[in-house]
Length: 104
Image 1 (tube, rainbow, N blue to C red):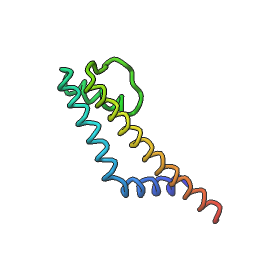
Image 2: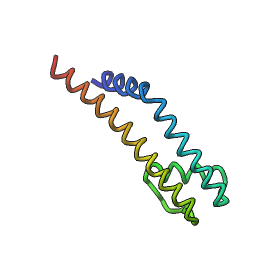
Image 3: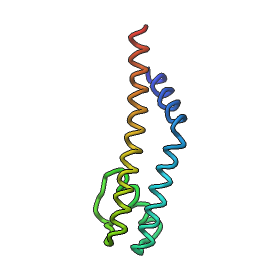
Image 4: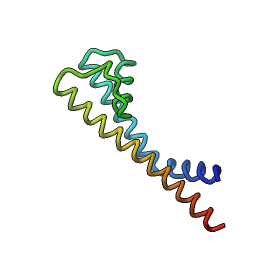
């Protein structure tokens, strides 16, 4: 059962990998732009981007200008799309396992 799920998950991820990588690159690039404007280091910028993109949002870094806040919203949308896409693939893999189990 686990092997079927993992196989379905990796098959689905392989299909949508271009979209996932584009979303990851967009999050990182936007984070670097925000960090450049705000005067943060590269590590702080990437940390902010992925914490915000994954909707964790600790609040230890917060953009101050309107432009960087708008870019942070775009990071949030990209993160939600990323998580939703991975969740949809996982649900599809679980559906595959369930259908295979019922067929046996």
